[in-house]
Structures are given as structure tokens and as C-alpha cells.
Length: 333
Ligand code: NAI
Figure 1 (cartoon, rainbow, N blue to C red):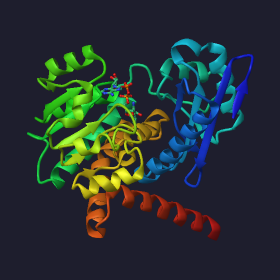
Figure 2 (cartoon, rainbow, N blue to C red; figure 1 turned 90 degrees about the vertical axis):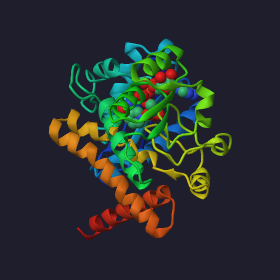
Figure 3 (cartoon, rainbow, N blue to C red; figure 1 turned 180 degrees about the vertical axis):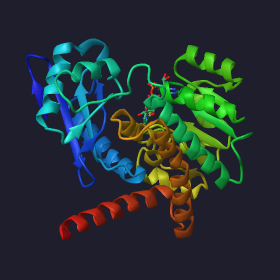
Figure 4 (cartoon, helix red, strand yellow; figure 1 turned 135 degrees about the vertical axis):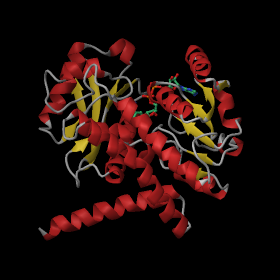
């Protein structure tokens, strides 16, 4: 828990697991109702980062930080610097970057007080959103094959046309997919629909669209009691974090014969981009790693089919197994 009264800072830095290496995860700024709500969110998100790193083969642990406040109103240089000093005090146990409400410019401010931050360089050819979208595209290619289809002609309903959703929609359109798009921002939806020759529906109507794949790229918790009975798709595959409101909703999707490609496997391009930002791999290397998400999803779907279990349950189990193995190896040394 981080507090700096003078700077108006209240934040939580959550380090969930460091079995594979120092924790990595973005910093979010949101007007949480309470510090408790911020804590719950940070813990949940940091756990998901551990899972993401394991499944993407990134030698990092899971972490996430949240700053309590409205980014449009409460963000100041003093607040960011106070937060950056807190990250620095952890001495490298936590490495962070942008997330909802925190952008590259904020990270530049943080980087004056701590070494343990990074973001995609200004003018870089590949941004974190590009890599995330490429990973989702490859995951969707695998999902399509699983359905006996190719991306060309695949009907995809895309929720959210922000940094990742729009890039993904462009990549899908290039492959010849037939898109239906929705965004809370009318202008954004309108522009995407005319650029990509895509059908457009009101945000609330996206759950009722008959399609092959529903792709959530906006909010978490969109697979819930209210939306599940409305879905008329064969699969769900998108970038949004924490798509299942509760794990029972993943089982319910499976019972309805809807294939759910687990979010943290599909959207790992965002975490993989860290290796590129830190110069650990070059552009060619990072593209190969991100495209490998397709193969990862394929392995997962095969294992899930042979075990007769939902892929997200199998993924959770793989994460636990791998962490246990690593801890045991450490014990031996
Ligand atoms: P963004 O903020 O750029 O875009 C989100 C878009 O969704 C906006 O255009 C917004 O108007 C729209 N939206 C919000 N509520 C909506 C609703 N109810 N219906 C339809 N549209 C709605 O966010 P970004 O960066 O594209 O991220 C999208 C999701 O992907 C988030 O869940 C994020 O956590 C996840 N993600 C993002 C990564 C990245 O590299 N940016 C990496 C991994 C995951």
C-alpha cells in the first residue's frame, strides 16, 4: 500500500508470484470507490499476470499496480513522481508500464525517478497494441480452424474499437473476415464501419449478433448471466482482460457448446512486448513469439478436447503445474 499525502497519492502495488522472475505488470489509474476496491482489483489483475507469463513462456512473475484517482482530474507530476519513487524502493522486484489511465507520457515522468518502468518507444514500428492485436488474430486463426473454418469469410462480432480492437478489426478485414462492430464511442464505430466495410450495431446489441466468433476488446466481465443466454456464436476470442465474470460462466459457455479461448492466453502479446521494449528480443523475434500464441492456443484446445474439459480450466491447471515444477526445481538446487 502506498500513500503520500502531500502528493495526493493512494496506490496499491500487488506482487502475486515471483517464481519465474521479478514481477511485471502495468499500472492502472481509476477512480476506485475505496482503497479496498483498488486492493481487490490489483490482487486479481496481478494473479492474471502470473498466469499470462507462464502461458506465454515469459520468465517473469505476476504483478500489477493501481493508483486511486481520476486520471483526467487527479493525475499530477507530483503524484506520478511519488508513485515512481515507491516503485524504485522495491528495487526491481516489480517492473511496470502503461495500462488503463496511464500512458507513455506518464511512464516518461516515472522513468525520471525509477529504472523499473518501460513502454513502447515513441515512433516505434510495433506498439504494444499492435502486438496484442497480432496475438489475438493468430489465436482466432486457430479457433477458426478448430471450427473447421479459415479467417476468410469468418463472421466476427467485435466489441470495442480502441487501441487493440481497431487494429484487430483491420487485420481481420484484411484476411477477409466479415465484421460486425460496436463501440460506446459513436464516431469510432462509424469510422471503423465505413473503413472496413463492416456492419455496425449499438453497443448493447453486440451480444445478439449471429456470428462465428464474438471478440470482446473493451471491458472485463462481459461473459455473465445477462449476456451468456444471448450469445449466438460458436466461439469467444478477444483481447479484453478478465472476460468471465466468474469461472462458472466459462463452464456455462462450454455446456452451451461455445468455445472460449482463455483471455490471458490470447492477449499475451501485451506482456510479450515487454521483451521487445527492454531490447531482449528484436522485431523479428518478438513477432515470432507473438505469432506463437496461435500454436499455444492450438495445444491448449487439443489438450482440452482430449480431457473433455473447458480450455480455461486446462490453462489454469497448466499454470499451477508449471509453477509447482519450478518451485520444486528451486528446492532441489
Ligand atoms: P481502449 O481504451 O483503447 O479501447 C477500449 C474501447 O472500448 C474504446 O473505444 C471504448 O469506447 C470501447 N468501449 C468501452 N465500453 C464499451 C462497451 N460497453 N461496448 C462497446 N465498446 C466499449 O483499450 P485497449 O487498450 O484497446 O484495451 C482493450 C482491452 O484489451 C482491455 O480490456 C485491456 O485490458 C485489454 N488489453 C489491452 C492491451 C493493450 O496492449 N492495450 C494488452 C492486453 C489486454
